[in-house]
Length: 140
Picture: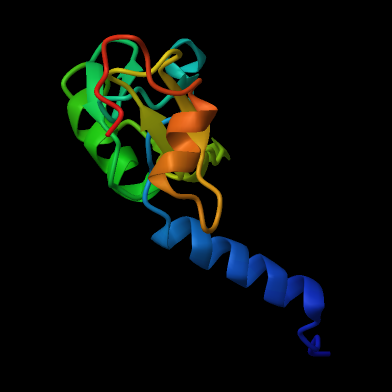
């Protein structure tokens, strides 16, 4: 008896496709699972430099790569210490889009800050949201 694919199958396929094509970014969180080595299995944030820290092997460049690409890099580096490591990288928090869609206002403003970008936002809006120009600026 064959089964007819339903909406749940379609959702699972789209989710798998998204994760396979998703490029890890700054502020995302990933779970690194190393089979039969729980002491090496960790959840790691992606730092502003795009790297994650992995026990034994140190920093790994994750930014701009897919989870499977990062898993392969970790697997290769762990193979110096473990025979045939089985590594999986799972995205647990997708937060890089929030980091990338922010505006940073620094310089001669009263309160330098990072703020979410809004559709139609102008430079003046951002400066005003940062408290306006300070006493050392040339506002014109």
